[in-house]
Amino acid sequence: MTRDTLSLDGRVAMITGAARGMGREHALLMAERGADIIVNDLNADAAEETAEECRALGRKATAMACDNTDIERFVALIGEHEAEHGRVDILVNNAGIQGNKLSIEEIDEKIWHAMTDIKMKASFFAVRALVPGMKARKYGKIINTSSIFAMEGSFSMSHYTGAASGVLGYVKGWARELAPWNICVNAVAPGTVATELTINSMGWDVIKDFEKTVPMGRLADKKEIAYAVAWLASPETDFLTGQLISPNGGQTIVGI
Image (cartoon, rainbow, N blue to C red; front, side, top):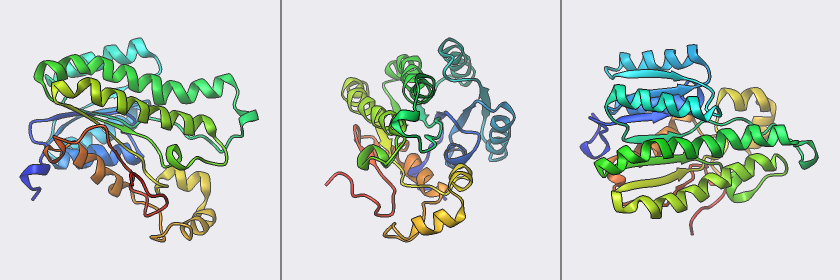
């Protein structure tokens, strides 16, 4: 049984990029803890599958399929789903795309915009759409997904590192701006996580070599990132804002 201070009973959470990977884990864990869920993703079929899994846990769940970089459509759908659920208390800005280990010379304007539009632009306008309701209720939890690369850099894909750093900047600004309305804004910056995308892009041989560089000797499990996000969404963090948590097994040390 979930202890009361971790319970999300009566809350509604919207999670972007929630059809697969970490986003799906966030949705399922929050549903287990009592939240109703808005499952946002580009993949309509997969979003509906995740929503159905949340319903099987006894929660109301709706699938919100769209291209989040189409801001007009994205914001309109947020409004529709917020109205259907009656509120949105928790927003997890999780959607993103891979950097694909591109060098500076390989990143053209189209590639740069594809990264920053989904990671930074869509995250901003999701918050802009939901903040009025949170202010009216004087309550909200906003959680941005960043990356360990925002802190330690990487040897390539600087557009990804820049976008991951940008959402940390949002956290600092939003946390101060929204604190008077009891809206908490925080970030999770995972180390390398064993998602389908990671496995497919790196391959198991590379992963096994990489795991040797992690002090704990392995990659993070998706569930371990979901625990951090669900905690930030819970009543236990009602006085925590403007902070960064990085579940990374000791890859880099944060905040000391």
